[in-house]
Length: 325
Image (tube, rainbow, N blue to C red; front, top):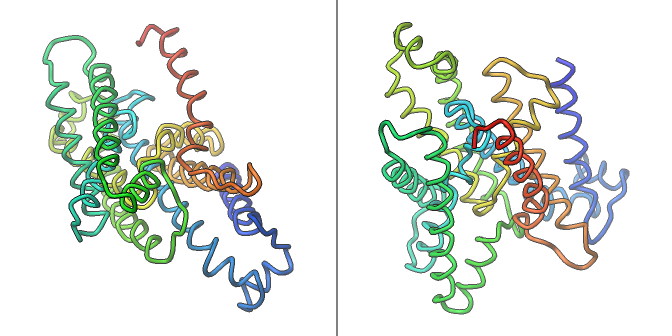
């Protein structure tokens, strides 16, 4: 309980800082008047400039965090996250392709289709029955597919007209600039729906943690449950990518950070902790991008990369020391 309250306190602190800090600092009094009375510069920041951006960041981070937690739990590997496995890259490529082709489909739908297609591609290429650690093969294939799809996305962006290319490049870098209430709804509506679906799947995930044979003995249809959980994870990642771009490392770091703060051990508690951890990482990364360099706003993908790259190197070193890589 204390751990959960601690995570909520960190989220609240990050939210208040995100609303107050920017090119113009807004004091507590002005922020209070803006929130409760709709007056002064605080109202402009909360309702128009920073509030929708913050809500979008929290939703995208929570969706990515949940996606990473499901995959890491299901595959029993801390490196199994949608960004490492190439799912985010597939969603990103689909959105850039839709910009290039002038499609009018909703971005979450386009990102979902791209994420599902990349997941199917990675699964197909990694399917090697009886050839070593299946999860390790999946991670390595996912890395290769992800790099390839990212390269194709960059190549496609270079062939776009100047205006569309600038939009695509900004989105590919991972950006929360100019987000409004519509973007917040784009991530929160599917995110909450998928969260409800995941709540129904928690028991299946708990049984799968016991091992496939025992889960099957307890009456679980193992293959169907795995497919459903992976599908939910891919769609959660797509919901986050659709509004924030193919941001790396959020899904990777969310579960370890959330567990460290809350101490959660049960499956449901770990998932909630991962959602909070992802939201915290995204909010802090966006805040750092706006406040680190005066007069310059760094894309959230850049600041998350600065935060996440050392963690990935540390995790890789730890896995190699254990002999698991």
